Image 1 (cartoon, rainbow, N blue to C red):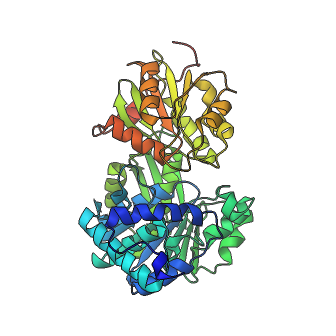
Image 2: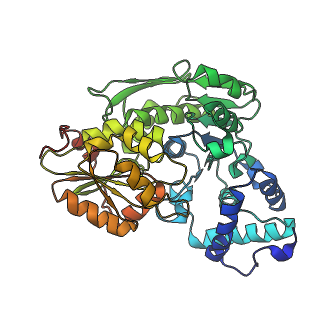
Image 3: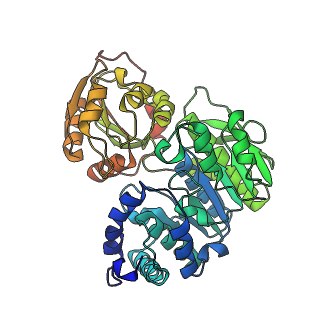
Length: 457
């Protein structure tokens, strides 16, 4: 590849990223490789080698786990960088230091350095590779003491895997990205195991014994296995509700800790995060600090209440396993006096019928299908055809703004709108609704509404 084919150096940060979007699409269909990213890092002076890092992957829950990791590390008086994806509203959300998003000027500066390095190395990074490199540069510049890095896709060939993390976290292994990994969970496990470095500590939230060998063959120094070395015991009155639990790691048992995130799955994410942080620190965290962090943690787009009349709840659940995990929460928030509306938009590669079945589509009164704001959006026609197999009224509205308007109109002021299917749907909906700061405890109040049979008003 010649330097003449590369994007010009005169582009600003936004223009440079836009110039890489088509490259992202074309490279996503080719054989994955770290070659470009490694050459780019060499040209930048390998900033990743000066970072102590926690690397987080998993089919579901990796974003939540990474965010909780960062909060716990920051509460331990460390300067913490967090790189996560995708973003909900603004690209700057992906790169933060102690909760503060990278500024426009700093992102432009980092991307300029990436662009110059790409010219020197005669490589053409994808959009995600450029953002990953910019994040690593920003963390080096800010002298972060702990970097929490979320994998973009799978792990072994992901752009983030240029780091040598001393702690790796695998939240779970589902059958996802089969077009790149292979036709089965064992292929996915192999790809995710690629983030594990010899001698490192692996926090393994996947309990399937048949998959364990894929992680063991990477020769981690220590494996902290769910329900063997780490565990969480629910102490609340009802499953899925925000309430107290005991979190046990090799360092301590933190008892009666409340988590301000709904869903049993979030407790397991929090457990993996806590185990990873105590492994990083090589000591137990003070239980009072853990309690403060868990009680205050708030994750946009994760079962987030956006409005009360009608009640609008948004979650970034984007695959079949996530839909199944979310179902108990969705079933819990019906309002007997109003209609129950599902606003759903999926990306290509998802099975819309299985996703809707796992979520409990037959318990809604109406389903409004739309298309997420991404080139990989699944057509409304495909999603609507799957939705039509359930005994519900289906509306197809490709434009997100119109789909939201129709959904809220159907629900009325006393109904419920549940928004799911993709970050690229939840993000635009949040922008349209402009959610106010959620009143503390509101998520718990939702569970006071009793489930009802669909069709009873």
